[in-house]
Length: 184
Image 1 (cartoon, rainbow, N blue to C red):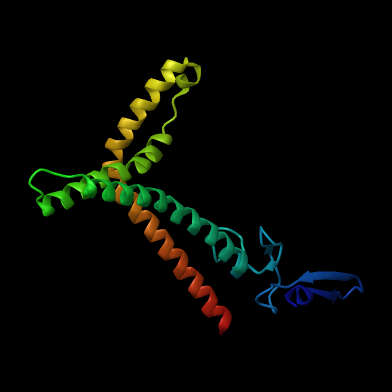
Image 2 (tube, rainbow, N blue to C red):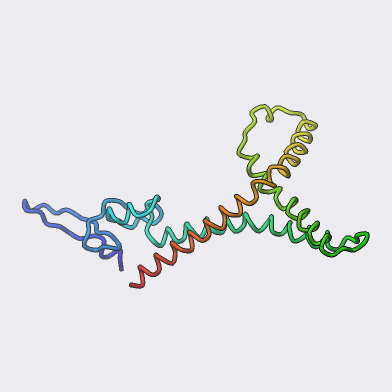
């Protein structure tokens, strides 16, 4: 129905006919742009509302894709953490101090779960000379990169987790605001 409302014929004073597109959301305002995804006409207020020129429905869909990528970014390290934790809990220890066993399993699990976050940090660094290496050079490269990922991941993991959770909350909050606005 909104597409039917968007186009209105306007007869000018000199008798010529012009077409004014109206905003899909504010039917009384002329459109100055359109949604980058679906092409809905948008007024200045709607097109300036978000960083991307998207209508509410397309923004929700775009944000859901971003949210899913953030969730996927947390799932793999989470799986590594759980597997390592369960494995190291099952390893028999001398003396069987349960507190030391749990604490050790948590530390080692965190250490291994932080590798993907360290790898992401290292992926942002580009080395031009790597393209021209023999197979042995690639092996050394990945061994060094894996070791550095473990070290860098120890420090970068809390920041990645905080960033991912903050973005997921922000996306959910924006979605709720849009849905509340639509309902009213």
